Length: 73
Image 1 (tube, rainbow, N blue to C red):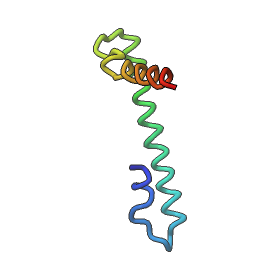
Image 2 (cartoon, rainbow, N blue to C red):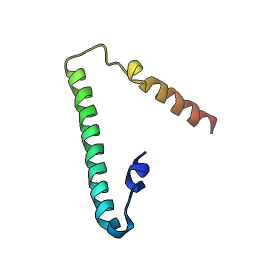
Image 3 (spheres, helix red, strand yellow):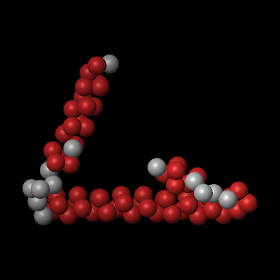
Image 4 (cartoon, one colour):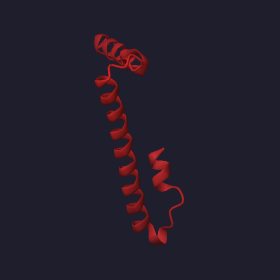
């Protein structure tokens, strides 16, 4: 999806300007998204909210997937 955002609708006469502008915006979007998600996890951990558990976030499934991939090799 990020590549789609970077490349669709570019005008080749001003390619350099448009591409640099889109790269900056994409980096900022990813930085803000990561910061918000980190802040939410920290806040929920500090307040000991039971709604945000590893099983609800899907982390236990990721661990099981990693274990099964490591054991199969």
